Image (cartoon, rainbow, N blue to C red):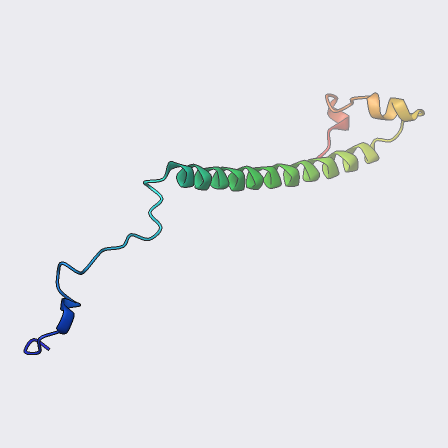
Length: 91
């Protein structure tokens, strides 16, 4: 190919151009959008973990309260906090 003269200088150095694809650094709007999407993803992950922990805590609390349902009134049962006494601590 070196010995062949290419017509119209199609591959001459002056005719070659570089193209940059997906360059987000120059456009701050794109960078901010990507950062905000990542923040939302992280926040949703934290929220899912928090909800899971809350469900586990509620289940343990209901099991514990159910084992101590010795009071006579419904409001007394929920309002009484025997968790400080040694004999009423739940595992």
